Image (tube, rainbow, N blue to C red; front, side, top):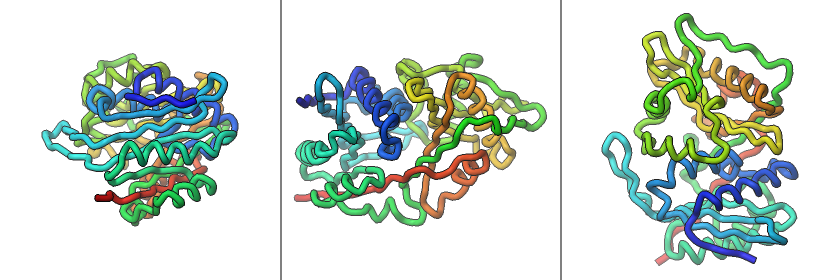
Length: 316
């Protein structure tokens, strides 16, 4: 059985449930955009503006979701610096339970019908079966995404064992949680690290309303002058005792001071205290993006999986 429509918050919770089931069985098959926390982050921050352009389909077996597709269709994005970006193609995020792998073809057929005529992108994991099926439907490597400074990502993992270092901050800096400061400060921290961005107070409110959000797992570093210098949001998957960093960022004027490293260590201590036994974080994987990977490696992360960006060009 399958159903289709505009993506809702209830759908996202079902998609997260499948993410948890796949994580328990085959964590290597969970694309970074289909992870438990990433689904909450992307839905929360974007549904108020992009929601009308999101379509989904879910496939069911005996009352449980066993596959889903989330398609983002063309839209106009306004950033906080006043610039406007037109998204002219379609992008798919999807997940299929390993016990129902044949559904990959149904996901592809649904996407191709929904986005007919548009340029179509998708980013599976390095799953040989899925990659063969996408290739059979006319999808090939995306050359731009795979360049030296391309946008493909890798998932990094580390255990939260007794060897976890204690964080050290420069004098005058301090840690805060989102519960201990204002929404305006939290948004300023994110926009400073990732601007120009569409993130604003409304987007943050959307994130806060997602089921797994916890303000005590949303951590910041504040500089001596009160500037929010770095921030990291963690998503705890209690069913699998894992937690995911998404997003992590440092204000450009406060980089190379050890703040990011201290924040990651601090966050992992908080995640472990909340019940996590393992931590994950996605990073850009292309050769030209060494800085973030190096930061994560420096606190004990190692590469676990990588995404494979695929493209099917627009057709007349």
